[in-house]
Length: 387
Image (tube, rainbow, N blue to C red; front, side, top):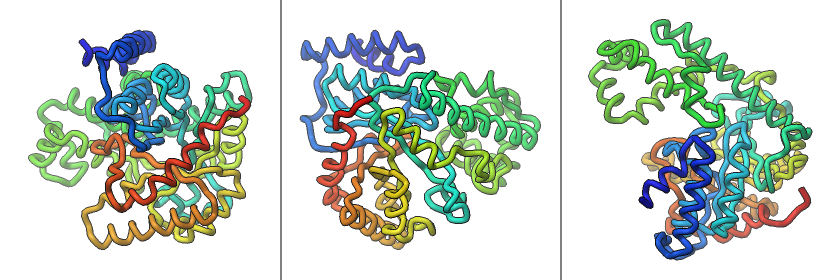
C-alpha cells in the first residue's frame, strides 16, 4: 500500500499526486513511514522533474519526498524552460517541513560571447542559465509570467523544427509532435530526450522486425548490436540516438542562432521580476569560455548572477585517468576562485540522464572538502524576501 502511494506521487494527474502526498504525510506523522537515514548535511539543489525530463519520471512531490526520506538538508528541483514544478515543490517542502527550492533552467544567448563556446559544447554564445529560489510561480498575466510562457514557446518551437528535420531524414519513421511527443510529459513541455523516446517507440510500432536493420543503417552499427542495446540497454541506446540525430552534426541539430534562444540579459531581469535568484552554471572548465574562471565570474557578477550551480559528478566520476585528473584540477580551480570572489556555489546531480545518482557521495574526498561551502551557499535561497 505504501509503495503504491509513493508511485502515485508521480501520476500525471495533479489531484492524484496531491491526495497521495497527503496520505503519505499522515503515515509519516503516525510513524508508519520512516527516513532511511538521520538528517545529514547533504545537498542536491538541481534535480529535473517529469515536467521536463527525469529518468525515473519523478514528479516534484516524489523528489521532495525522496529528499526527506534520504535525509537531505536541502533539496531543489528545476525544469527546462518551465516553472511548472515550483509550486508543487514548495508545497511538498512545507508539508514535510524540509528546506526546498524550485526553479528552471534554460539555454540563453550571450551576445558578448557569441563566438565563444562557454558551457554548451560546440555551441558558441549559448549558456545554461537557471532561476532558483522562487517563492511561488509568477502569475501568468504578470510581466514575468508572460516571459516564462515565451521561453517555453521558444523551446517548443525548436522542438517542432527538430522533428520536422528528423521526419524528413528518417522518412519511414515520422512522429507527430502533438500526438506522439506532448503526452510524454504532464505539462506539455517535452525535451530532446522525449523526442528520442517518441522516435524509438514509433520505429518499433511501424517497422516491427525491421527496426534493428533500420537503426543499424542510421547509426552505422550492426543490427545485432542495435537489438541488444534497444532491448537490454534502452537508456544507452536513446543517448546514442540523441547524439547521432539531434546534437552537433546530426540531421536534427539546430544552429545556435540568437533568434532560437532567449537573451541572457532579459532572462536575468525576468527571474528577478518573478522573485527568483539568477543562477549561473558551470560545466567542467575545459571549454574556452570557462578556462579563465576569474574572468568568467567577473562577467557573470556584472550581469547579475548571484550564485553558481555545478554538477561535480562530471569532473570526478570519469574512467579515463588523465581526463579525470585534468577535470578535478579544473573543479578545484573554479571553486577556489568562487570562494575568493565571494560567489556562492551549490551543486546537484540533475537526474535527467540514466545512471545519475539521487545525491552526490559527499564522503568522496574530491568534493567532501567543499560540502561546507555548498551548504553555506545554499542559504541564499532561503532568505525571506518580498515577492
